[in-house]
Image (cartoon, rainbow, N blue to C red; front, side):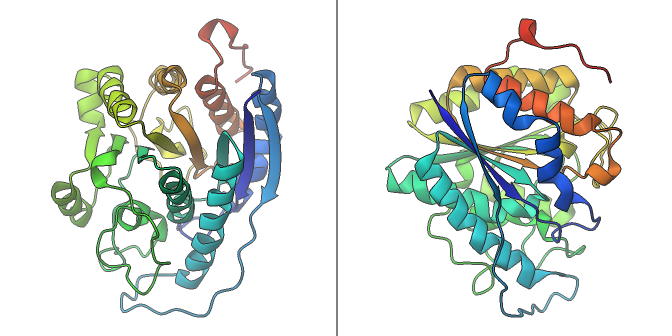
Length: 308
Protein backbone atom coordinates (compact mmCIF):
# COMPACT_ATOMS: atom_id res chain seq x y z
CA UNK A 1 0.00 0.00 0.00
CA UNK A 2 1.32 3.42 -0.96
CA UNK A 3 1.55 6.02 1.78
CA UNK A 4 0.69 9.70 1.64
CA UNK A 5 1.64 12.39 4.15
CA UNK A 6 -0.32 15.61 4.62
CA UNK A 7 1.72 18.59 5.82
CA UNK A 8 -0.06 21.82 6.66
CA UNK A 9 1.70 25.02 5.64
CA UNK A 10 -0.51 27.91 6.83
CA UNK A 11 1.61 30.62 5.22
CA UNK A 12 -0.37 33.86 5.15
CA UNK A 13 2.26 36.54 4.79
CA UNK A 14 3.34 36.18 1.17
CA UNK A 15 0.10 37.55 -0.27
CA UNK A 16 -1.87 40.78 0.05
CA UNK A 17 -5.15 39.31 1.34
CA UNK A 18 -5.43 37.49 4.64
CA UNK A 19 -7.20 34.16 4.88
CA UNK A 20 -4.86 31.48 3.47
CA UNK A 21 -3.84 30.67 7.05
CA UNK A 22 -7.14 28.75 7.20
CA UNK A 23 -6.38 26.78 4.04
CA UNK A 24 -4.92 23.60 5.58
CA UNK A 25 -7.87 23.13 7.91
CA UNK A 26 -10.30 23.80 5.07
CA UNK A 27 -8.75 20.94 3.12
CA UNK A 28 -9.09 18.74 6.18
CA UNK A 29 -12.71 19.80 6.74
CA UNK A 30 -13.47 19.05 3.08
CA UNK A 31 -12.39 15.45 3.70
CA UNK A 32 -9.05 15.27 1.93
CA UNK A 33 -7.61 12.56 4.18
CA UNK A 34 -10.72 10.41 4.03
CA UNK A 35 -11.00 10.82 0.26
CA UNK A 36 -7.40 9.72 -0.30
CA UNK A 37 -7.89 6.73 2.01
CA UNK A 38 -10.82 5.52 -0.10
CA UNK A 39 -8.38 5.36 -3.04
CA UNK A 40 -6.22 2.80 -1.23
CA UNK A 41 -3.54 5.00 0.33
CA UNK A 42 -2.35 4.90 3.91
CA UNK A 43 -2.59 8.56 4.95
CA UNK A 44 -0.79 10.29 7.79
CA UNK A 45 -1.62 13.86 8.72
CA UNK A 46 1.50 15.43 10.23
CA UNK A 47 -0.32 18.57 11.31
CA UNK A 48 0.96 22.04 10.53
CA UNK A 49 4.57 23.15 10.22
CA UNK A 50 5.52 25.81 12.75
CA UNK A 51 8.44 28.04 11.74
CA UNK A 52 10.96 29.34 14.23
CA UNK A 53 11.28 33.13 14.58
CA UNK A 54 13.94 34.58 12.28
CA UNK A 55 16.07 37.64 12.87
CA UNK A 56 14.74 40.84 11.34
CA UNK A 57 15.84 41.14 7.72
CA UNK A 58 15.68 44.28 5.59
CA UNK A 59 15.91 44.71 1.83
CA UNK A 60 16.51 47.81 -0.31
CA UNK A 61 13.21 47.19 -2.12
CA UNK A 62 10.85 49.04 0.21
CA UNK A 63 7.76 47.36 -1.26
CA UNK A 64 8.70 44.00 0.27
CA UNK A 65 6.81 43.02 3.40
CA UNK A 66 7.09 40.10 5.85
CA UNK A 67 10.53 39.16 4.54
CA UNK A 68 11.72 37.72 7.86
CA UNK A 69 8.53 35.65 8.19
CA UNK A 70 8.94 34.23 4.68
CA UNK A 71 12.54 33.26 5.40
CA UNK A 72 11.35 31.48 8.55
CA UNK A 73 8.69 29.59 6.62
CA UNK A 74 11.10 28.71 3.81
CA UNK A 75 13.66 27.30 6.22
CA UNK A 76 11.10 25.21 8.12
CA UNK A 77 9.30 23.95 5.02
CA UNK A 78 12.50 23.01 3.18
CA UNK A 79 13.42 20.67 6.01
CA UNK A 80 9.84 19.38 6.39
CA UNK A 81 9.63 18.67 2.65
CA UNK A 82 12.98 16.91 2.61
CA UNK A 83 12.02 14.65 5.51
CA UNK A 84 8.56 13.96 4.09
CA UNK A 85 10.00 13.04 0.69
CA UNK A 86 12.32 10.55 2.42
CA UNK A 87 9.50 8.88 4.36
CA UNK A 88 6.46 9.12 2.11
CA UNK A 89 5.48 8.03 -1.39
CA UNK A 90 3.52 11.26 -1.83
CA UNK A 91 3.85 14.25 0.51
CA UNK A 92 1.06 16.80 -0.01
CA UNK A 93 1.66 20.33 1.26
CA UNK A 94 -1.55 22.11 2.21
CA UNK A 95 -1.38 25.88 1.79
CA UNK A 96 -1.20 28.57 2.63
CA UNK A 97 -0.17 31.04 -0.06
CA UNK A 98 2.27 30.16 -2.83
CA UNK A 99 5.25 31.46 -0.88
CA UNK A 100 5.29 27.99 0.68
CA UNK A 101 6.96 26.71 -2.53
CA UNK A 102 10.04 28.73 -1.57
CA UNK A 103 10.54 25.90 0.92
CA UNK A 104 8.76 22.83 -0.44
CA UNK A 105 10.34 22.69 -3.90
CA UNK A 106 13.95 23.02 -2.68
CA UNK A 107 13.18 20.40 -0.02
CA UNK A 108 11.95 17.76 -2.44
CA UNK A 109 14.73 18.69 -4.88
CA UNK A 110 17.30 18.00 -2.16
CA UNK A 111 15.83 14.54 -1.70
CA UNK A 112 15.79 13.91 -5.47
CA UNK A 113 19.49 14.79 -5.65
CA UNK A 114 20.19 12.49 -2.73
CA UNK A 115 18.66 9.51 -4.57
CA UNK A 116 20.30 10.48 -7.85
CA UNK A 117 17.22 11.54 -9.79
CA UNK A 118 16.37 14.74 -11.61
CA UNK A 119 13.66 17.02 -10.17
CA UNK A 120 10.92 18.38 -12.44
CA UNK A 121 8.14 20.84 -11.58
CA UNK A 122 4.70 21.31 -13.13
CA UNK A 123 3.47 24.80 -12.20
CA UNK A 124 -0.33 25.15 -12.51
CA UNK A 125 -1.01 28.82 -11.91
CA UNK A 126 -2.37 32.03 -13.42
CA UNK A 127 0.95 33.68 -12.52
CA UNK A 128 4.54 32.62 -13.23
CA UNK A 129 5.75 33.77 -9.78
CA UNK A 130 9.18 34.54 -11.20
CA UNK A 131 9.88 37.93 -9.65
CA UNK A 132 13.17 38.51 -7.88
CA UNK A 133 13.37 40.51 -4.67
CA UNK A 134 14.55 43.42 -6.79
CA UNK A 135 11.75 43.37 -9.38
CA UNK A 136 8.61 42.85 -7.30
CA UNK A 137 6.57 46.03 -7.10
CA UNK A 138 3.78 44.61 -4.94
CA UNK A 139 6.20 43.23 -2.37
CA UNK A 140 4.08 40.07 -2.16
CA UNK A 141 6.65 37.31 -1.89
CA UNK A 142 4.32 34.58 -3.15
CA UNK A 143 5.42 36.00 -6.51
CA UNK A 144 9.07 34.87 -6.08
CA UNK A 145 9.30 31.07 -5.66
CA UNK A 146 10.08 30.05 -9.24
CA UNK A 147 12.81 32.65 -9.64
CA UNK A 148 14.35 31.47 -6.37
CA UNK A 149 14.27 27.70 -6.84
CA UNK A 150 15.54 27.94 -10.43
CA UNK A 151 18.59 29.80 -9.17
CA UNK A 152 17.88 33.24 -10.64
CA UNK A 153 19.81 36.25 -9.36
CA UNK A 154 18.60 38.49 -6.57
CA UNK A 155 18.20 36.17 -3.58
CA UNK A 156 21.78 35.70 -2.46
CA UNK A 157 22.34 36.43 1.19
CA UNK A 158 18.60 36.86 1.84
CA UNK A 159 16.65 33.66 1.14
CA UNK A 160 18.17 30.41 2.48
CA UNK A 161 21.09 29.16 0.34
CA UNK A 162 19.84 26.61 -2.20
CA UNK A 163 21.34 23.17 -1.79
CA UNK A 164 19.90 22.06 -5.12
CA UNK A 165 18.31 24.40 -7.64
CA UNK A 166 15.90 23.30 -10.36
CA UNK A 167 17.04 23.48 -13.96
CA UNK A 168 14.63 25.96 -15.63
CA UNK A 169 14.34 23.49 -18.53
CA UNK A 170 12.75 21.08 -16.04
CA UNK A 171 9.86 23.45 -15.24
CA UNK A 172 6.60 23.50 -17.18
CA UNK A 173 3.97 26.18 -16.54
CA UNK A 174 0.35 25.82 -17.57
CA UNK A 175 -2.56 28.25 -17.23
CA UNK A 176 -0.48 31.42 -17.19
CA UNK A 177 -2.49 34.58 -17.94
CA UNK A 178 -1.21 37.36 -15.68
CA UNK A 179 2.45 38.30 -16.20
CA UNK A 180 4.25 41.46 -15.13
CA UNK A 181 6.81 43.01 -17.54
CA UNK A 182 9.78 42.00 -15.37
CA UNK A 183 8.47 38.43 -15.16
CA UNK A 184 8.05 38.36 -18.93
CA UNK A 185 11.69 39.31 -19.35
CA UNK A 186 12.76 36.58 -16.93
CA UNK A 187 10.68 33.99 -18.75
CA UNK A 188 12.15 34.98 -22.11
CA UNK A 189 15.68 34.63 -20.75
CA UNK A 190 15.59 31.51 -18.58
CA UNK A 191 14.07 28.84 -20.84
CA UNK A 192 11.09 27.70 -18.78
CA UNK A 193 8.39 25.94 -20.82
CA UNK A 194 5.24 28.09 -20.67
CA UNK A 195 1.75 27.24 -21.93
CA UNK A 196 -0.43 30.27 -21.34
CA UNK A 197 -4.21 30.20 -21.65
CA UNK A 198 -4.11 31.31 -25.28
CA UNK A 199 -1.92 28.31 -26.11
CA UNK A 200 -4.29 26.06 -24.16
CA UNK A 201 -7.28 27.57 -25.99
CA UNK A 202 -5.61 26.82 -29.31
CA UNK A 203 -4.09 23.40 -28.62
CA UNK A 204 -5.70 22.07 -25.45
CA UNK A 205 -3.93 20.70 -22.37
CA UNK A 206 -3.34 17.09 -23.38
CA UNK A 207 -0.58 17.36 -25.99
CA UNK A 208 1.76 19.77 -24.16
CA UNK A 209 1.31 17.89 -20.89
CA UNK A 210 1.94 14.55 -22.60
CA UNK A 211 5.19 15.87 -24.08
CA UNK A 212 6.37 17.22 -20.71
CA UNK A 213 5.56 13.96 -18.94
CA UNK A 214 7.50 12.04 -21.57
CA UNK A 215 10.46 14.33 -20.90
CA UNK A 216 10.25 13.53 -17.17
CA UNK A 217 10.01 9.81 -17.90
CA UNK A 218 12.95 9.84 -20.33
CA UNK A 219 15.11 11.47 -17.66
CA UNK A 220 13.96 8.99 -14.98
CA UNK A 221 12.91 12.12 -13.12
CA UNK A 222 10.59 12.82 -10.22
CA UNK A 223 7.76 15.31 -10.56
CA UNK A 224 6.51 17.92 -8.12
CA UNK A 225 3.14 19.49 -8.97
CA UNK A 226 2.38 22.94 -7.57
CA UNK A 227 -1.34 23.66 -7.94
CA UNK A 228 -2.57 27.19 -7.28
CA UNK A 229 -6.34 27.68 -6.93
CA UNK A 230 -6.14 30.62 -9.34
CA UNK A 231 -5.14 28.21 -12.11
CA UNK A 232 -8.88 27.50 -12.24
CA UNK A 233 -11.66 29.62 -13.70
CA UNK A 234 -12.90 31.87 -10.83
CA UNK A 235 -16.51 30.91 -11.53
CA UNK A 236 -15.79 27.37 -10.30
CA UNK A 237 -13.13 28.24 -7.71
CA UNK A 238 -13.85 31.61 -6.06
CA UNK A 239 -11.80 31.08 -2.89
CA UNK A 240 -8.62 32.83 -3.95
CA UNK A 241 -7.37 36.37 -3.45
CA UNK A 242 -5.72 36.61 -6.88
CA UNK A 243 -8.57 35.79 -9.26
CA UNK A 244 -7.85 36.16 -12.96
CA UNK A 245 -10.68 35.49 -15.45
CA UNK A 246 -10.23 32.87 -18.13
CA UNK A 247 -8.74 30.03 -16.14
CA UNK A 248 -8.85 26.28 -16.61
CA UNK A 249 -12.28 24.68 -16.78
CA UNK A 250 -13.54 21.86 -14.60
CA UNK A 251 -12.83 19.27 -17.28
CA UNK A 252 -9.43 20.68 -18.28
CA UNK A 253 -8.31 20.53 -14.67
CA UNK A 254 -9.59 16.99 -14.17
CA UNK A 255 -7.98 15.85 -17.42
CA UNK A 256 -4.62 17.17 -16.24
CA UNK A 257 -5.01 15.34 -12.95
CA UNK A 258 -6.06 12.12 -14.68
CA UNK A 259 -3.09 12.27 -17.05
CA UNK A 260 -0.75 12.87 -14.12
CA UNK A 261 -2.24 9.83 -12.41
CA UNK A 262 -1.73 7.69 -15.51
CA UNK A 263 1.89 8.81 -15.76
CA UNK A 264 2.78 7.51 -12.25
CA UNK A 265 5.47 10.21 -12.11
CA UNK A 266 4.12 12.55 -9.41
CA UNK A 267 6.07 12.28 -6.16
CA UNK A 268 4.95 15.45 -4.33
CA UNK A 269 2.21 18.06 -4.48
CA UNK A 270 1.48 21.62 -3.35
CA UNK A 271 -2.15 22.73 -2.96
CA UNK A 272 -1.95 26.49 -2.49
CA UNK A 273 -3.77 29.81 -2.24
CA UNK A 274 -7.04 28.38 -0.88
CA UNK A 275 -8.62 31.25 1.05
CA UNK A 276 -11.71 29.88 2.85
CA UNK A 277 -12.72 33.43 3.84
CA UNK A 278 -13.56 34.00 0.16
CA UNK A 279 -15.23 30.65 -0.50
CA UNK A 280 -18.91 29.77 -1.00
CA UNK A 281 -19.95 27.06 1.47
CA UNK A 282 -16.67 25.20 0.95
CA UNK A 283 -17.17 24.95 -2.79
CA UNK A 284 -13.54 25.54 -3.77
CA UNK A 285 -12.12 23.30 -1.06
CA UNK A 286 -14.37 20.45 -2.20
CA UNK A 287 -13.35 20.96 -5.83
CA UNK A 288 -9.65 20.88 -4.92
CA UNK A 289 -10.21 17.65 -2.98
CA UNK A 290 -11.96 16.18 -6.03
CA UNK A 291 -9.06 17.20 -8.26
CA UNK A 292 -6.59 15.64 -5.84
CA UNK A 293 -8.68 12.46 -5.97
CA UNK A 294 -8.38 12.41 -9.77
CA UNK A 295 -4.61 12.74 -9.42
CA UNK A 296 -4.56 9.77 -7.05
CA UNK A 297 -6.70 7.42 -9.08
CA UNK A 298 -10.38 8.29 -8.99
CA UNK A 299 -11.90 7.60 -12.40
CA UNK A 300 -14.66 9.54 -14.15
CA UNK A 301 -17.16 6.74 -13.59
CA UNK A 302 -16.38 6.70 -9.86
CA UNK A 303 -16.98 10.40 -9.26
CA UNK A 304 -19.80 11.11 -6.79
CA UNK A 305 -22.55 13.62 -7.42
CA UNK A 306 -21.97 16.93 -5.64
CA UNK A 307 -24.55 19.26 -4.17
CA UNK A 308 -22.94 22.49 -5.46
